[in-house]
Length: 284
Image (cartoon, rainbow, N blue to C red):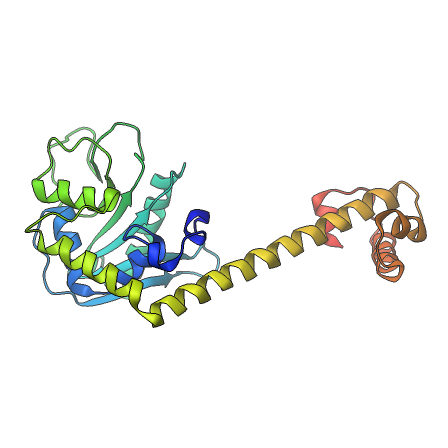
């Protein structure tokens, strides 16, 4: 979760904020409308729809959590809101697409059953620096660019601050709403989104979910901080111990409990630790 969102009151959240985006996109019709607006095509009836779908294939690969994941029969879509620059955003999109494709094909099924998968990142910053409003990345054959591979699998990056001279008025309105919360007259999709945002801001259940989410985030962060401080303490003890200082001296210098320092020093001696490297600290 981004730090700027943690500092916001729930009533100040807008559509592009991580929590609000997920809440609003829980509405399948809004999700369908957003897809149609971004891709410029009609989407069939939504087969299933999940917000923050967790995916992990084999046990030894990196798991992912998709913001919004839905399907219309043959095609599966992942829609992500990206509000800050990320150096390896394209690599992330590749990985998401790979995990989605693994999830799409059940064991024993032929490859012909593999449908199309589309990953969409709605970005508040230009992901590639070309000032385009839309970056669409597909597979192609270098030697014959006109050759059609027969798949609509692709990655789409929408830059809401990019050059919109080639975009439809509907797309321009959608980008302006994300960037500036502008609600144009006559645009039913944006009006519906904005009403949903307003409803979620007022909903006590959603407000409670948001507070619980923030509390859980801080708990995890504090646990990580405590673990980091613990590892640094062990590193310091290693350094002092291998330089010949006694447990009593180390405890006095560091202001720590002598018994605890003694236990760590005993572990250093038993494991024959000779330095304060990360590997040595992890062994202890």
